[in-house]
Length: 533
View 1 (cartoon, rainbow, N blue to C red):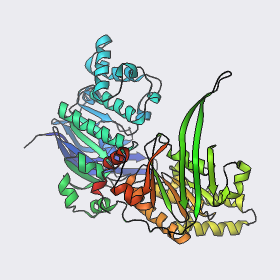
View 2: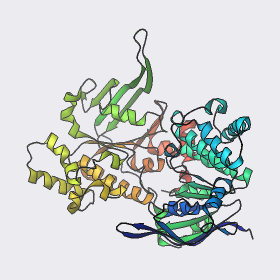
View 3: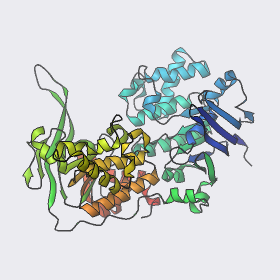
View 4: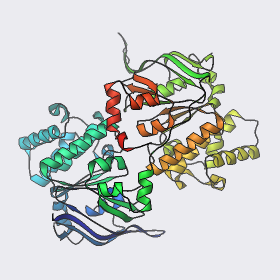
């Protein structure tokens, strides 16, 4: 039997807050053997990250811990701070969820990786720089000799995550804790990072504690899995055993939280509601006093049309031009080419010319918390559009409309006097949808509306969008990099890369018989074969 490298034994974590104690982790127990990968899964607030942070002894002072965290038999909860500093980096390293906030924006990446080598390996000067280059090369950073002097903002999201992995590997740890390391990444970059971690694990013999809410990753990546809910482990075991025969109802719910079914097709004779011909969007990079200005082409000559009641899914990786195209079609960005709404050419309309159409063309953004004013009540947020587009309504009439909109998105109207921070992520997204629906639009631009949500919440929002579309005959322009969501909601799909349309066609054709290598790579990286409809 393989000896446990890390053993969590009846760990509890309680935060002493002004309003009273809150227990975030309750009697959690699991173990990881050398060279093994254990996935800690669960939805937001389940206690996954608190558990991993406790293992690193990085919890704030207001946290009280009990139980034991044994690493190679040594209880880390009992060691001195000096001893714990030696364990961190040398024996246990951690990759955090968001590399942009974890890396120092003022220091070059070579210096940041080099600091780890100085602290844990006493490696300085030329030897330090040479080892940094080796690490950058190992994690697949292109042109490491040039990139070593780059700042974090000069790297892509995937490259920043690779830098974080290089920093974690610098001390040659026995255990790597990866806290949602692929959440903010495109599916192809996500697949590359997972493959990289697997290869590095095989090379160094590391154990990995992998924290995630994405079960499609877990099936392909982890040897064992522990499922957390409300701070407790509700089920654990070999990954295939848990996936093929889940015992706990919460585990079954997570495994079933996959967007299923297909959208009912719009009538074949539905008229075209929105169309674009040779749509282009350029952004000025440098404006010169003499000579030509330099431009970046974000959208390069795209043709498309959307019929009334239809959903057009636009997919592609970050930087492909998806959101830029969506905003251009709704005249939220300047563009070239022809854009028609119903029979009218709206290409040349300015802000005042578009104002009468704004109530008919609405947007639901990716981050509901960022798009909702924290200083306004939910009722004021939802009714704001009515004040602009229907000034004839009095206060009582507006309030009646707000109540109806909240009921439509399955929220209690009595909560309309609360503020956005008092709601969960899924509730905030429903509020954003209600704000758009209250104006009775004909077309909704949905820009990554489910990407920030847990899987089970995603499914409920998708069901809501389907119901609303069927009830009101809405037309959706649905932008996402989550292919399972696009498959469940769309009639047709348009695949974008570097501002161009790579492939387009019916949802069935794109997902079952993709012609282009790029589309095939996207589908393979999304692990869609495990998501039966």
